[in-house]
Image 1 (tube, helix red, strand yellow):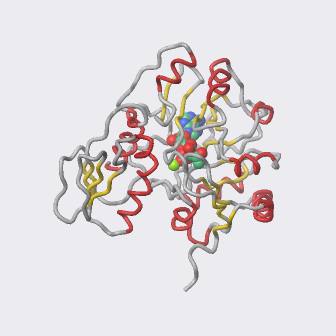
Image 2 (cartoon, helix red, strand yellow; image 1 turned 90 degrees about the vertical axis):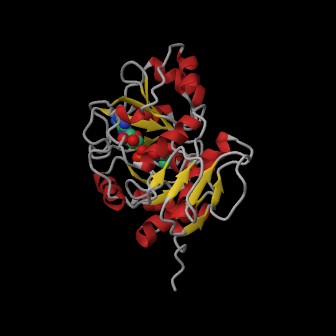
Length: 318
Ligand code: TXA
Ligand code: MG
């Protein structure tokens, strides 16, 4: 049997230049980031970007996040503003994505931005990705490396499972440090959080010196075209805020008040929300692969990155 992981490569100079050449030829590669693994392609090439949409089965109206490694390159494509510069200085490179106005003469493929006049941009902290971007004279469109609406990948093996041999190179950066997608903040007018993440509204409010409202019902904000109600889904019915699970069904729990057991999956015994975030997609994928028919989930504290965990759980359960 063919090894399903034969498209996973360790990060060394030889494999990096191979990956870089692939990108120059408008091919796609799987890359690690600190949040989740991504599927990367040349953002200036409609040919490359189209491949991303096809492979992910992503609706064309859902724009991609464009990844850069420095402000000089970014300036070619978007207008920078004061709020952006404040947040950039404080949080980039890191798990935050900024929605900014696109320049009229931007070189970005119109498909990558779903023909909008705004662009979501991010500077990842991952060294491998930074090295790649540095050696390219185009930015990379990088959505999470999963089929549209599925669970996001947090390891190179997850990416291989999603796309099999349709992706020829996946660089192995080990498990993702954060495990949940970046915070998306719209800076085109009054700052708004479109997708919660590790960097929360409090930290963003503080950095901007303005109050950003907490909106517990993120799905109501349809400003982000990709804020699909159903997303991150294991494809199994899920019940949230449960005290216990039915026999033989999976039970995702949090904290040591839950006993260990065969069908019990603890996101963090020590009640650490960052650890829970890191374990969430891994756990969902594991449960899916074990062919459980139903997933029960206990309630998760709605503080810090707990907001982002609950956001993903709500969508996954939809
Ligand atoms: O952590 C992350 O952000 C990962 C890693 C790979 O960088 N990427 C990621 O990309 O999560 P993706 O495509 O799975 O999610 C991008 C989100 C979608 O909800 C999309 O609708 C939104 O960003 N987005 C992209 N462009 C936008 C725009 N111009 N305005 C509003 N939302 C936008
Ligand atoms: Mg995604």
